[in-house]
Amino acid sequence: MAEENYKRMAELAAEAADDKKAFDIEILNVKGLTIIADYFVLCSGNTDKQVQAIARAVEEKLDEEGIYPKQIAGKDNGRWILMDYADIIVHVFHKREREYYELDRLWADAQKILKKEETS
Image (tube, rainbow, N blue to C red):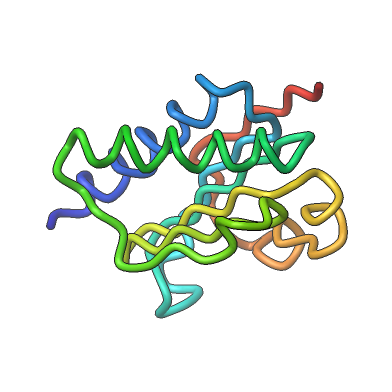
């Protein structure tokens, strides 16, 4: 898959998260910083249920495009759901978990493709 397709996948995931009122949505280009993926999508929700709804929306939106996750972790507890699409990794955090793990700071050197800082 071409680089622009990975970016578009990340944008679709961010749009789906935004549709479910996720906040602090970021797309980070981590290519060259890690071998794990090319893009990270980070977003937050206020409750376990909202976090789960955001993850479901992302999965459904990408499914519509024929894009399926290799693995999803954390779906049951709704605190930090990690959705592995190989070259794209979507992190859906409960607000407190995002503050605790500070992935934004850890990947501060990454190019920010999108940063939507709405808070709820």
